[in-house]
Image (cartoon, rainbow, N blue to C red; front, side):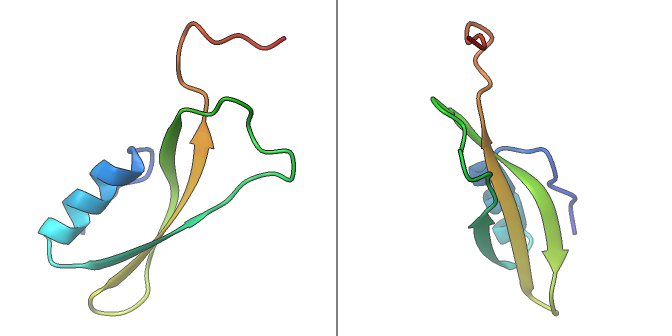
Length: 69
């Protein structure tokens, strides 16, 4: 199984499905969340049984033009 940690969520799903896995995903975030978040990336990958993979993702601000106020 390909390690997809750090990849954009949709790309990670595509890779794992192409390898024959059934993929589910769950978001992890702080109570405040991330204002103006723009990209979901995989932060944890768990192979639960023969064909199922659980991805945990978080949403980040990744645009270099974005700055903290």
